[in-house]
Length: 244
Ligand code: SAH
Image (cartoon, rainbow, N blue to C red; front, side, top):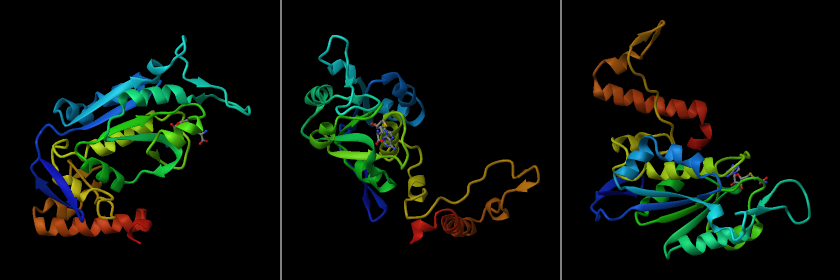
């Protein structure tokens, strides 16, 4: 079962179960990715066969004896730069006809929820994600070998591993069947340019802090109304830019 997006509404459409989004992540720190991929929702998604995620060590495509993949920058300056050749070799081996290659970079286009929606809708997709480190990649990687450069925000991290996990996680949790309760996706922050309403759980009273009465009332219509109103209020208070 797959769900298509039509103006923010999800309609169930039957598709053969062989379809699956595949990810290949290329990094020099494979272990740092594996722990997250082997936990929680991403782990279950892989076990259910809804997604395939492989982690590769870029050094496997180095042509040097010492498995070197970086070198000093031409023109001088601090840091190391990932060489074009190992990346080229990796892509020659992993790239298929339908592959999209993503490069993690603070200079890339900032990720937003609608990007995840779009990428999760392509149920036969194959996404390769390149994780940089140090000073990043030789410019020829940017210019000749990738389809998209993405950033996860206007700040600089030490590596592309966290951004790669952000992309994999953001896409995977939208694949039908991955989350237990698909309905919750429609109500989430950013789905309709609003933020999620406030959530509470037991106990109804703690340290003098109480849960809004209406949520305990059992009146579904009133609860729905409260949630819609408070979703708008949250958006107005915390992210007024969303409702412009
Ligand atoms: N010298 C570069 C920063 C390199 S940071 C510059 O100033 O633009 C090293 C690596 O971390 C990058 O190659 C990229 O893979 C990753 N990275 C750092 N910040 C990132 C961000 N905000 N979004 C995506 N990737 C990022």
